[in-house]
Length: 288
Image 1: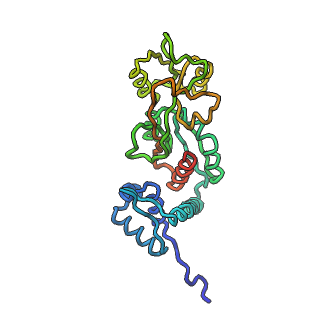
Image 2 (image 1 turned 90 degrees about the vertical axis):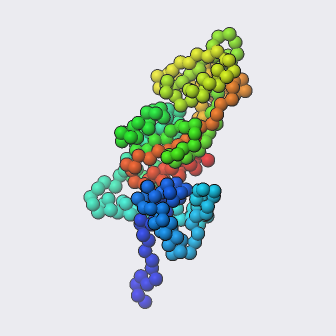
């Protein structure tokens, strides 16, 4: 019996293409990432499906979605590419450790520092993650200047360029001591003047002719939380942040309705694609 007879070899570039299309749900979007034309990507995917004898994608409107076979293959493909990259890093004498500088908005930091990043680092023991906090505007600027590798920001509209993670309802947060009606202006706490929620919050209050006054906590989430807990002010948090703080009450009924926001990931392309894709998947699963 000839050793290796019948064995097949995987093409790493094809796997990278498959992973990119799976993550972006589009061959058009993937084309700029893997530097191939849409036609070349389509041919690669078709040839890959033929070699595996499975259908990897199905069309959903204008987007592509993974089939059950595609989802089962994705994790293995990411692991294969990661091992390939680690192999070449070792051969070329590079360190096998990778450092991801993750930028998140102030109010999202607690969410991602909890079980999400813990689970991610357990699955990637050679990866170090550091967190930088800032406003959405600041983090996008840091991404352009290569001060962070990945940024998770808040946007009211569905993203055009970034990777959609989830959409969450914005809530009014207060306590039983918080006066939401009365003669004095309602105190509204913001972490910073550039807070992503500020415009919609002020518009909502003005639409009901509710007198209000804003104050800023010098980029401190804890200071805003303390002001709310003591009844001095109200603030606004996303659903996931509210769940992590059960001692702070949702007071939506007493105040005007608020919109929901998108959590969007932007990739600065300074880290291996497979790591960013794995991080994205962990975030999407934890926020589902």
